[in-house]
Length: 630
Image (cartoon, rainbow, N blue to C red; front, side, top):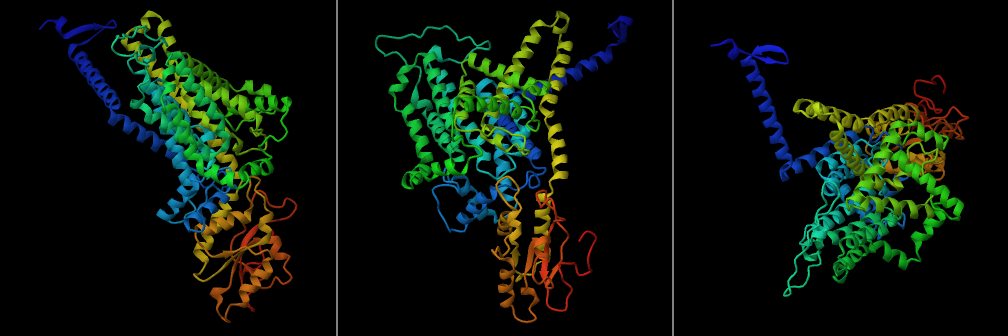
């Protein structure tokens, strides 16, 4: 065998031919494996697996701090409403707020019936809806611009702090708005895409550069010209879009801004396709009817009860509802809305004191730029839905909503009013990213077009994209650490419930002190309401008397002598115990629990106290005597 057969020049270095063959085989095997994986995920089974993985990954990201942060809000009112439904006490046509629909309360009530009451359940349901929204975002992105765009959009939503902290943690019906809105967007997009695939060339799928093939349709004298909208084929998707929009309205009436956006999207596609004959069919008119049917419980209730829901919005929601609209207030709300949108697509925890300081955040500028460019590209490619949704929201919502992320909003709660735009914004960002990568691929020097350098570029682009998706987890982690240290509310509430679960005997009643109602957690709930709901979810029998002392004496009077198990446990403020005319019977049996919103001028805490018979140590102290700071 000759030397030339044993060696070959590779990059100026002679290597054994056998080693070269091994490397080539390894590359071939890797290529075959990657090709098989790509082929699998392009199939229906692979797509289903990808959706499942996205859902599970989103669940894993949303699980930490589920009950811990944010602290319990007026979600407690909605939870009590659902519990009343589960117990068969009420069968309402609306939610607790008469302008919400009953959809979510009945779902939560069904879950309580199926799994039993649980402190975890209301927030776990919202977490599942949040993770499902991530999966739906992939499907919507795939329908709008392909699988890769869908993956990018779903990845960005999976790590978005706004969607995690608010829409996947707080047990509001409004937290589920992005799910139903995305379902509506998906159904409408599938309808329009299906109709673009009919015989009319004007409605065929858009090319990779946004150019529609110029193929003239062929007509015969015997057959009428095709309208391009063979309605029976895809009417289901249009009716589903209308019905899902009605469900979206259940979650918050502010989503009324999407009604003109959906109609405008439909009309723009019809106009671009010159397919006006579709309006002669019943399906475009039945879609709004389906929406009205879905929303009919709320309409029936309000029409038969003097518009009670509208009155409640106007009189009890002054923090959000714009009661005295002027042009000056409208433009102020308009600017605040755009800044809110800029925050929720990037880092919602960052609320600069000056508007000019928004320009100092590179990540915010990058995400806003990508989203806007992507929305423009989608509109150019005959997918106007994101643009219509953004413009209709920005033009209409400031006329009635003024709550857009103030400095006091440490939990980004007001962002929930526009979070339904997040899936569209992140899908648009994915479109812009792919367009940018395509542009770079066309302008790179010729030597980088070879297979090996091209793989390096692809890997580098993948790394940068992964970092872009994962970056929001860094401010999210900082936020968790900061708020967990500053706000002990939920940790104290949950520790109290755990203590009662371990300490309370089966016949021991629980009394919730009156002064806890004065501990306002600033987001629609006070400490007494929260304990009332948490004890309902356990469940543990309890009372919340207007006069704590009188309520305790009433219970004690009915207890037989020596029956210490029937003596109550009392959750009350240290101040309330010390203000009792007779402190002797109250013995502190738990640790001292603190809340962020307790009285700032007093050494205040709350604790669990036991009513003790005469002869046992009490005086609002532990059995072992006073502790430092008592």
